[in-house]
Image 1 (cartoon, rainbow, N blue to C red):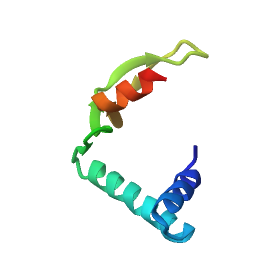
Image 2 (image 1 turned 180 degrees about the vertical axis):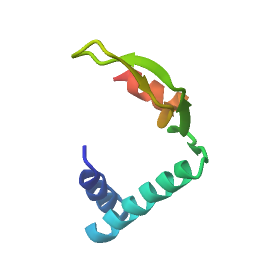
Image 3 (image 1 turned 135 degrees about the vertical axis):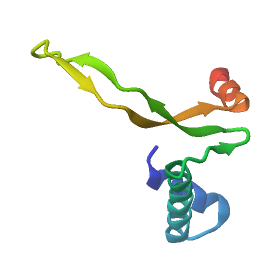
Image 4 (image 1 turned 45 degrees about the vertical axis):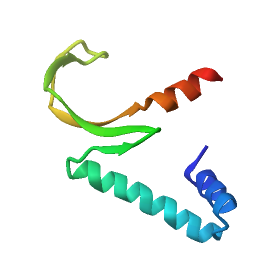
Length: 92
């Protein structure tokens, strides 16, 4: 399912025009991105929690040459599904 598919379903369920539903989906995603970028946690009860975690710097290897390389510290977005969401997915 793509973002456009989600917008179509939102339009069908809410009676919004497809354009307004697409804007609503875009606004929601922008809010989540902005919150994560600001270091906030986004918790949607019954669905899950989006969070930003920091991965420490580490040593690695170039798989082609075997040369040791340094992998810098970085931040990654994570998602932890909520209990209701996990149970729904495991039922099918």
